[in-house]
Image (cartoon, rainbow, N blue to C red; front, side, top):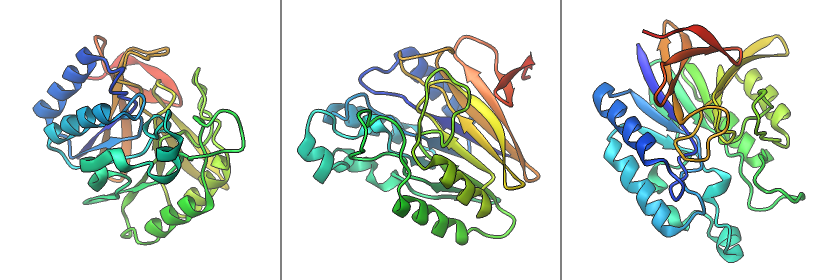
Length: 259
């Protein structure tokens, strides 16, 4: 069985120390096969926040891929935002938007952040043509028989959570990814977990969202997802700080705790 930890929206600068320590203990005790971090490592993309994030990820000592979230782009420095948006990542550069290849599973990145948008709220999602084509090219190279996850920061379509992604061209991207063979799109941004199935042109694709390890919670306490993969199928276990673990299906929490 393959076990992944899907974590998102840690927001160093507004992180929850108790939640971080809880996640660290789980990683060290259980040694997941990989960690998928779907964006918003920082709160304001400050250098010291990235330094904290880098030290944290290095300390986990597991294969990791990191997506860029809207909070990870410089907010107060327009020059840096437009010309050097990733400069403060430094040591993290080697894991930013990198594919993960585990036997039987391929994880492909999809960029959903933008330095500029023709709308007032730049925090919402945007899938550009180049970003989508990059992901589709990676999907073309996936070995036959692999389960395929796409990792993005913003949900491509809404999943019934209180917060929204409002991702421009998200539906179009979802259709293209489903046609190319993606089995699921993993995301964050909304700070609440979900796992919903969408049928796109006759093909099923799952949309899986992770919660947050920050103090900026919504309808759930700090949480992360454990994804268990076996025999070409997977299930999502939501692990919530201070509460039992639960399976999530079609955006609803199952009645029984997970053993």
